[in-house]
Image (cartoon, rainbow, N blue to C red; front, side, top):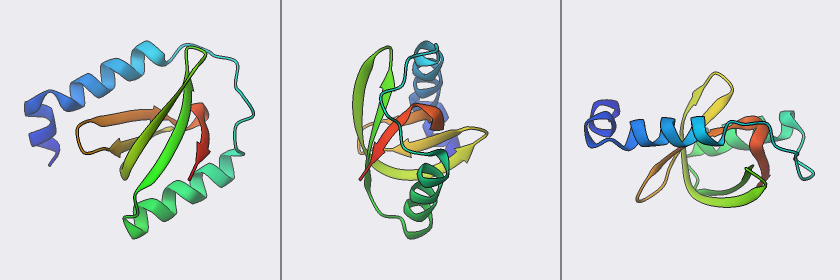
Amino acid sequence: MKWGAFATGELTEAQNTFEKEKKEDKIIQALPHHLVLHLLNQSFSNQVQIKIQYQAKDKLTEVYGFVSEFINNQVRVKSTDKIYLISIEQIVNIS
């Protein structure tokens, strides 16, 4: 799976998007980090689709998908059409 994502450019695109959005933003009442990690871990363990709202550049973005991997302080979310690399600090809401 990793090589397929790399070959199609999805992984590189996700990393490039993450780097662009990495700048320090003011956070809109984010969930506590321990709660975010707990919910992401449950989604990863049970392979349950979740909706993640995260803030980048003073803009809220919603992503629907499955948690596929944890990398340092980031989470990789696989949607039907794209792979997202989201910093855990940017996550505002999970449902």
